[in-house]
Amino acid sequence: MSYKFIDLFAGIGGFRLGFEKVGFQCVFSSKIDSHAREIYFNNFEEIPAGDIREIDIKTIPNFDILLAGFLCQLFNIDYTLKYPLKAKQMSLLDLGLLCT
Image (cartoon, rainbow, N blue to C red; front, side):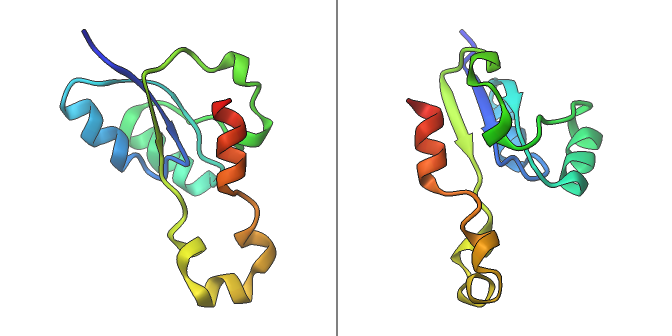
């Protein structure tokens, strides 16, 4: 049996690469940054969906595992002080709403 996963805040696909190497199957991915989406496409020949907050969750296939890579900038005090609104754009609450 192959486990299915979704790859949210996917970056360029590092988590996906690791999970696929051990036999898991990615059924959905999402990344808001256009440059990262291009690199993701080069790595997997698949363009991730955009902003997860704008995706109808009913369109996400069934999955066993949710992968979620968060921006490391959110944990950097200099970034959050310089860009407080950007740092708040995506929160754990948003992810929790998706999982309910």
